[in-house]
Length: 148
Image (tube, rainbow, N blue to C red):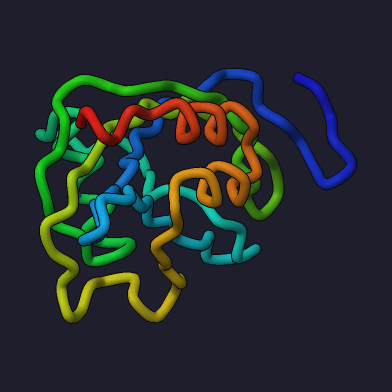
């Protein structure tokens, strides 16, 4: 187990699931919605822990609904994976995130985490630049949303 300045890091990777929510503007340009983390307000995609009784893509869709009020058509196969260190109160945990594409059809007027996070649509290149994890940025940049 490695030690970090801010606390312990656990080496056992934990699985998370995430959604990459996108829509197409009337002019045909694809946009991706990012949400902020609750504590540090960094831009991320909606993600969380697997949910018992739900398949990965179903859990990813639920995370997008809870974190940003998004509803749509979720892809059943991951479009990418990345690993990051999740900061917790007293330590860090290594997480491997499986990402699913969510074609957004609606944003609900209210949702569970509405007061805890900001959410905003960005063009694909800007979304890729705004996320901290380089591999996540590369995944976003490489999506062929015109073909999705």
